[in-house]
Image (tube, rainbow, N blue to C red; front, top):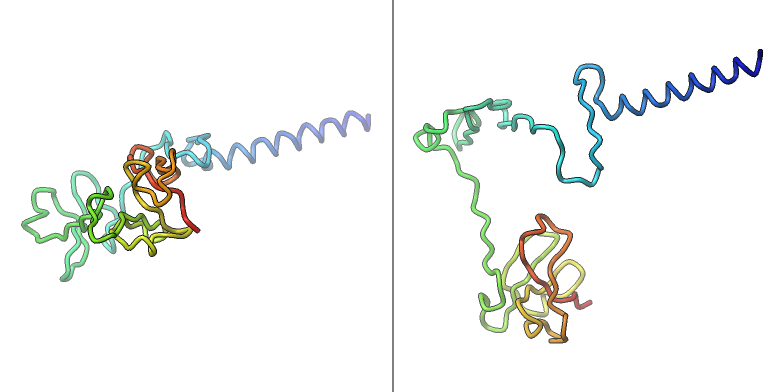
Length: 169
């Protein structure tokens, strides 16, 4: 009798533990959606929610967020009114170089991981753990060793197509 009640208790505890884990993955009773994607995945099955527009809250389709230098600083406007309302466009993020030949005067095309920037720099500045020289061929690297110009990995989209020299510490 005692053995039977212990086995029932064990089954009950396992059921509670399983439902707790499942509830944590599924977001609770209101959503009824389960997300079993790995934590390191860049893709998920859910749709992205509305993007917040400063103090205006979220803009719902078909409106877009309008940021202005004068009050109201943030508002939701129709896409065709974006320019007429003098909404600010996000700054263009264009690197000053993308290959070694873009730099002159002994400078190298350098990627700075911490600042997330690419710019022409003197070769001495572009050495260390947080920088790397962008290369096209092995001859662009300081060592010029065969196989030294390798694809950049682990940053952003895998299709960026940037090659770097090994870091010089």
